[in-house]
Image (cartoon, rainbow, N blue to C red; front, top):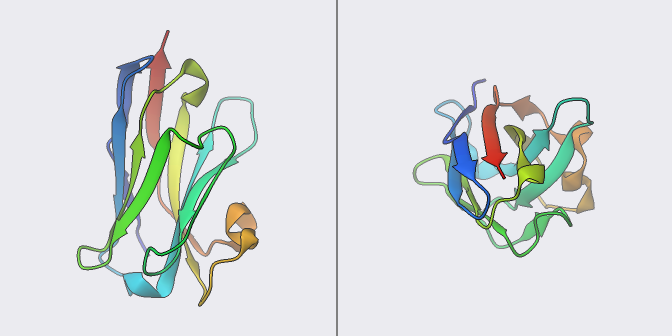
Length: 126
């Protein structure tokens, strides 16, 4: 199963980026979708997750109020709108899919996810 993430790049602090992740193989609406990130030398960190039909979301404390996760099940895509970026947001961002009926706080844990994308690099310059 392939999850294809895109939209990363280099941006100045205070700027915005929009990441996108899509899959042509999953029955998309059956999966909770999440975004994680990993900076060099650091552990993978939860960023955001969204329930199967988009009615519920979770955010990591470091991105609350700046990032917005959304999904379009008709296009099999999940997006992460990142605003007011800071250098500490620099990382490889991964999308992931969890096959589950209901989203619980376990969606904040990487072990809950069944499929992962290849990652897209986000670099924020100061």
